[in-house]
Amino acid sequence: MPLVTLYVNQAVLEICGKPQLAAFHDFLAQKDMFATTPGILQVNLVQTANMHPNPNGVFVSIRCKGTKERTKEKLSSILQRAGEHLVKALGRDCKLRLECFEPDLQLAVKVAAKQEQAKL
Image (tube, rainbow, N blue to C red; front, side, top):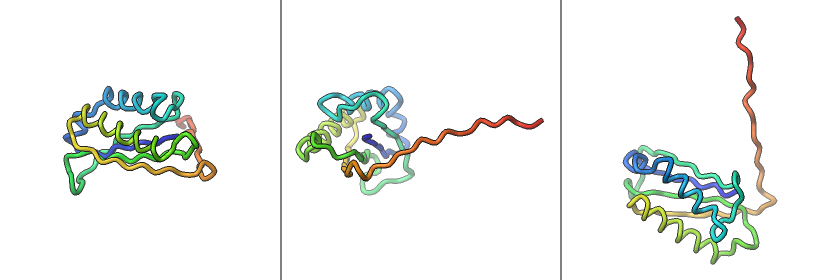
């Protein structure tokens, strides 16, 4: 599951609404990018109080499972294209980093909240 986190300040947050986030998600999920099925790729937007050295830029952190298709060249291309997409959409400088991990090291769980009836 590629996990993509965008760190932005308040000014960028106001530009980057749901349509831009959804468009970025769909862009990354394409066959020539991460090629994920619906529900696998996750894109999160995190507002920061301050970033250094570029407080008005966008910092993107991507974690993904290493696969034979995700070569260093392919991942380099994904980073470059993702950065270009964001610069065009947001008009801000972007710094991106990508970290791959071994598939056998991945663990994931989904924990549902229990619905309890209120006692009257």
